[in-house]
Length: 282
Ligand code: GUN
Image: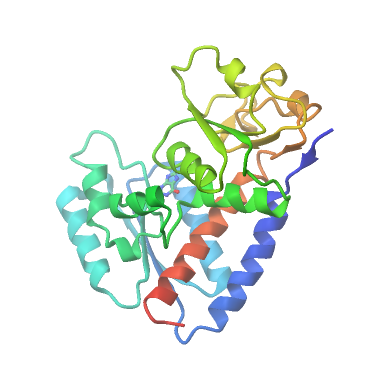
């Protein structure tokens, strides 16, 4: 039976630590959260990010604008936030509404890289690539913190990342590589996925397809990290991994919910704290 990686408990520990560091600053950090349109899932994410901030003493300001706000107005808002000294971090919740003139890449490029607490700006992505970074994207950073906490060292291990998104898969692979893992990236068009995942000592799945990872695809004793957030036929949260069966075979496993989700949230706080420090608020 696998050890269950308790992301919720680890996130609570990190949060206490961040709260202490925030309290010691000369000025509190500030986060601007932009929400365009009324996607219910994005609304939930944004509300929880703001709640996390207030619990840690981080000032947050919400900019909820209608879907028809438009690309130009959004770029103007970001330009204004780039200039405001009390705002250390800017987060524009993705995805932007479909059917309008939004260009996500242009929006990410408009955010001052020094305030890019999501680490989505190409400048910060490039810095991650070369292993010299101020901000790490929140989900992969949370995964690395969980591996560290449980003494799972990627060095010399076979690491398989399933998923190639800019937000999770690609940066996750880079972080494992920086820690000397031997990394393979798989995706929806990888044939015979199980053949590759069965080699993994550390398996990270970030696809968004329920029961994608079954027990026969997992090596005995592997660390299985489930980044996905799906719903089953009863509307219950679940990940990509068949948790019941895989937990009988893996060495470590993250639950959904209570694994990667809370750690992702805490890493945004960590990045906002780092932003405030880099802006001279320490
Ligand atoms: N949408 C889903 N995850 C994220 C995230 O981490 N940051 C932003 N900005 N949007 C998201």
